Image (spheres, rainbow, N blue to C red):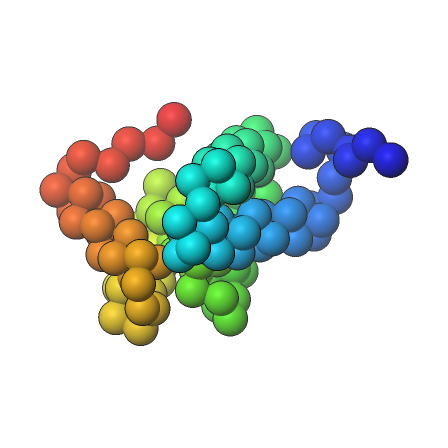
Length: 123
């Protein structure tokens, strides 16, 4: 059975897909699997674009993921909410950089550095 297009998913289902992709990206990053990591990253970027396309209220739904139990979800959501909620995004990334071990924590730290240096851009 073919998966529905992102444009066909309800908002809650889209956030579930985002969560699954963020976790898959985190696992692939930590295990050194760039193919799976890149696939998951592409999915996260596509979902973020779909949320943005649906308007500010849908895009702001990413804020709910800042409280997710998995640090990869908090890290991805934190980086993508910087665009419209920089304080919340920075707090999430700071927390992930302090508490997550390995590459997930390091990625959060470097995302914050690039953001604060003005080098992080949103498509």
